Length: 179
Image 1 (cartoon, rainbow, N blue to C red):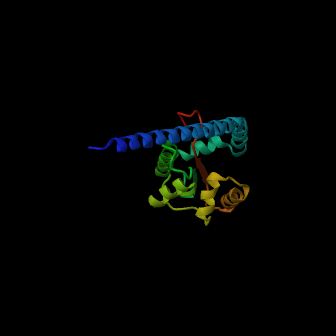
Image 2 (tube, rainbow, N blue to C red; image 1 turned 120 degrees about the vertical axis):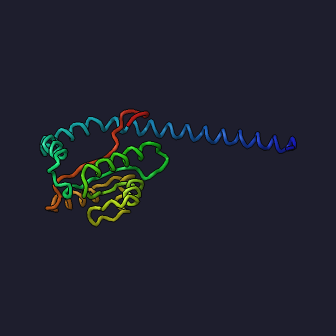
Image 3 (cartoon, rainbow, N blue to C red; image 1 turned 90 degrees about the horizontal axis):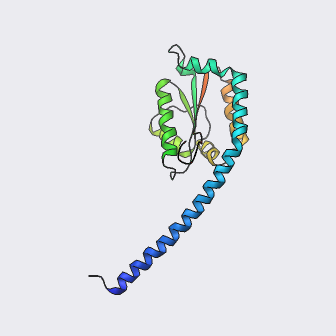
């Protein structure tokens, strides 16, 4: 039977833990609000850029041809993006599952995995990597996007005659409960 002193100690410990978790909750909600505001501010830019890319590449034709059985899957490169953190719940799981689905639709496709979690999932799945990009640079790209590695990826894809199609797999923010 615990003594009164031990019970008081446990109560104090639980109260202390409650204060810490409450503070963590406040910090995480502030970070979420900041990230949500930044994402919503980028949405018009993303929509305009997507429209320009569709116009320039004739994306409707590319999307239709990727569903065609005659499409050369070996010439497909999938750029899949996830986070480096594992405290994201379904965020990483959904994008990894979608990437696996795309790879089933395109046997022989190679992957550029951006983010630690995506890189680990593709490595464990035995999916062939595309190019000779350092995995560390691609992992860092998830947290700190920069022009240099993206430019290197783009140059590789544009100059490689074996690449017929590039597919992007990423999460799209809708709301805090749905991506």
